[in-house]
Structure formats: C-alpha cells, structure tokens
Image (cartoon, rainbow, N blue to C red):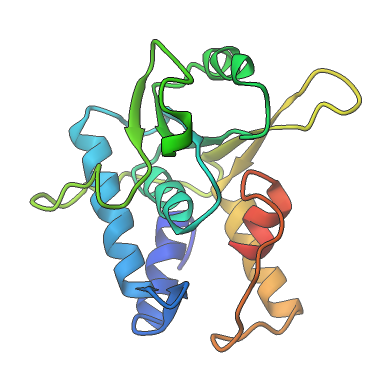
Length: 199
C-alpha cells in the first residue's frame, strides 16, 4: 500500500522498470537507483528526516532525480524559482531554515553560507552504502513552495506526501495516461502544476 512518496516512486519504477522515463536515456529502474544513491549521499552528509533542502536548478531529469532523493530520505524539498533576482535566494532559504542547496552550474556562487551540491547526476551519489528508508507518513511535509507573489509577498505552501502522490495518481487516471505517452513539460518544475501534472 502506498502512503508516502518513496513507496510511490518504488512501486512505479519497479512496475515499469525497463521503460524509458527521461529523454530515452534513463529507465524507471535506473531513475530509482540514482534517487536512492543521492538519498544515501544526503544521509551520509548528516541530513535527516524533516531537513529542508533547497533546489536552485534548471528543469530536467537531474532536477527530478534530486527531488525524488530528497523525498526518499524524508527531507523537505524547496524548489526555487530560477528566474528571480539572485539576491532573493538567501532570505528565502533562511526563512525556511534550509540546510543545503542543490544547484545547476549557472548558479555557482549565487548563495553563500549554506552547503551546496551539484545537481548533476554524475556527482553527489553514494554507491557503496544503501540509504536507510525512514519512517514516512502520508501527512509528512514533502515540499515547500513559494507562491509567485503577484498579489503581494510570496507565501509558503506546504505539500504533503499524500498531496503529491494522490493528485498525480488521480490526474493520470482521469487523463488516461499510459506508459507509451511522451510528455513535454512547458512549465518549470518549481511550478506546482508542472510538478504534479507532468513530473
């Protein structure tokens, strides 16, 4: 029975293990393995369930795998809008007491005073030790998102594990999605619609 995002990822990736998930390059099984290796890396760095880990990276497979890894080890993913002025990021991270930040190469040096890791899937992986599956509940926070702030100061929205996987399952059912479908995601993945409807 699925009651958290790790269960959701594992069940889905095992069901479609040999099918392509990203760009005809990464299968579902490979995606799960990479996410677990990054989750193990985070645990090895001392991060624990409930720690907020930011993401300042372009939308691609590496973004998705990092988001999965943070969920798998029980962290709370904080995707940031890469189009904001760089001076906004430190206060956004500080407000939620983020412990670390995954970045694309474009954002090297954009934020000081926080541990940063490359989002590239060739780095920040633990290949020798398996990650320890934490006790995750459906109502545990999985992600914090900042609203766009078009009508005022950006506000923080909390998405639980259940918010994300139940909406994704329902959307796939209503849209009659199949493993043969290919999705082109036009919105950035830090946008909640793209996060749930596409990823």
